[in-house]
Length: 502
Image (cartoon, rainbow, N blue to C red):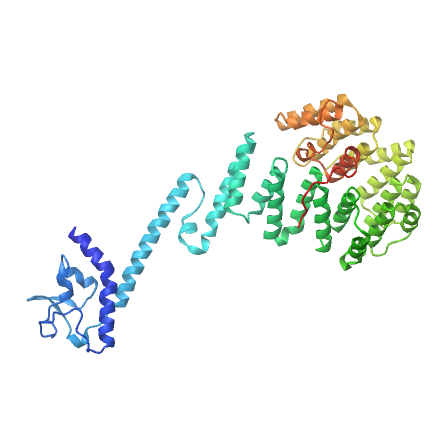
């Protein structure tokens, strides 16, 4: 108890006695000596230290003031009264050392605790302040790994909880936030949208890539108001994927209440919209029923608009106007366009619209002639999207036979192709192939995939659900196939949802 009491006296004494000595020095002896016995002479080695007399062991006072020394007569002050001085350095060393010891003890305790839980932190993460941020990053990474394990074990609810924890611990963790937003888009769409917005704000260098993932989620849910707002924001921000965004804007605007004349003029007048001004003008002409003027504009060249999008858009609109030959002429006017997907998508649509079955069959044969490789697999996406828009069971069976004959595996890279074939089977009414593809996908994933059965029932007409929207977010589909499904199965102006993107 005496040692404990003296320790407590030391803690406050280092401050108290140094303050009194400092005041004594400032007063230059005009105030009484704070620590020497007033009844002694004040001479060195002859004066008792009055301050130490209250300690359980007076010699311990030397930790406060090293001027106290042992003499044959006992403990005495080693300097004259005039030379009494404070020892702030000693106080600083004591408090600094004690603070460092407490800090290291706490840091090691935290380190042991975190390691016991399983967080892969190292000692520097918790002891060195510049690395403190790594603790939250490591904890976030730990929960990400746990979520991956839970997904692998078919525990989606548990996996989402881990993902949520990972993102809360490190809101700047792009991978955790993006994965969480994608998985929440079905059950919690509002939360998903909020996370996408947060990610775009926190990662301006990845804003455009995040926006594309958000766009796909919004499109699959049929939230076309937000699709339009997001597309317009990306166009104004100079997104490198501008053709994707102008097409998204057009698709959404066609299914939403039209803009007023003033708003439409102001939108097309903005500098960043200059490459797309002819597109906006054509859309306005079509919306107001002025097809002749729209056709005249579609027959001209648009120097500011990228060639590939100009050819695709002009051909697509002419196809929608039931003028397949004019659509093919629009493609022929742009010989510099070499994007195979763009050309095949436009040609297939034009030939199907014109009911040129022989030419369409030849086009399909040319598309299916090369061996299917990662570079040529997108052809299947284009063909299935066209089959959804223009059902043809014979062509579908040729496409499916090609994929099955070449034994295209079901992997993360090819999953979208198999889901596209599944939707195309439903669109053309090939129920045998639809059932076979459902079984193949379930077998490949090793999951019951209940939503796949519900979607199959929808295509068969056995579902109470009259819209495909509840199923789209769960299907891994390419963008072109999603567009095709929405065009065919969602009535105009019934895809919009409340809420607007900022």
